[in-house]
Image (cartoon, rainbow, N blue to C red; front, side, top):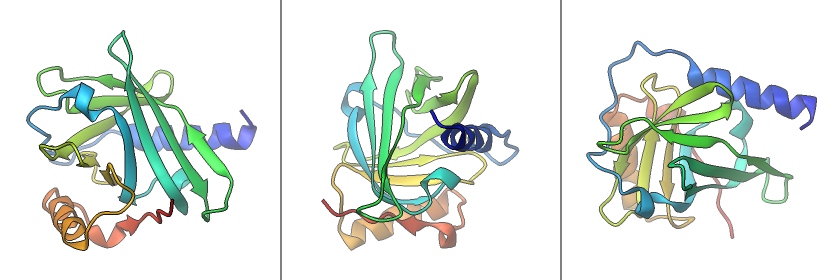
Length: 174
C-alpha cells in the first residue's frame, strides 16, 4: 500500500470512528445477514474524503464462517474512466438481536460505526447511517432506481436527522 493510500485509509478510519453525542439513529428491526450479502450500488451519499468524486461505486459483502463480513468497496476515481479504487474493510456485527449495528474496521483496532437504518422487505434498497449524521449511504441492488424511490429514500434520510443538502448522487453507468 502506498503512503498516500495508507494516509487516506487512516484518515477515513479516524473520521468514521469519531465519538458521537448525537441522538441515536433508529436501525432496522432485523437484518437477515444472508439476504443482505452481495452487491449494493451506491446511489447517493454524504461522502467520506476518499470517496468524493466516486463513479460506479459498489459495496459488496460476504459473510465469513467466523461471523465477520468481508467487505469490498470499489469505485472509479473522478470519472467513469478514472483509476479503480478498492477498499477492503471487515464488518463485525455488534448487535446480534437485530444484525443492524456493525463495526466496520478499515484499520486495526478501530471499528467505525455502521448502522443499517433501513432495508426494505425485498432487500433491494438500504440506508447506512451514523449517529453523528456526518456520512450516509443510499444503496440499491441495481445501479439506478426510479426517481420516486430516490425521493422517498432521501426523505427517510432527512427523517433520520441528516442535512440532505449535503447528499450527492453517485454516477452509475454500466
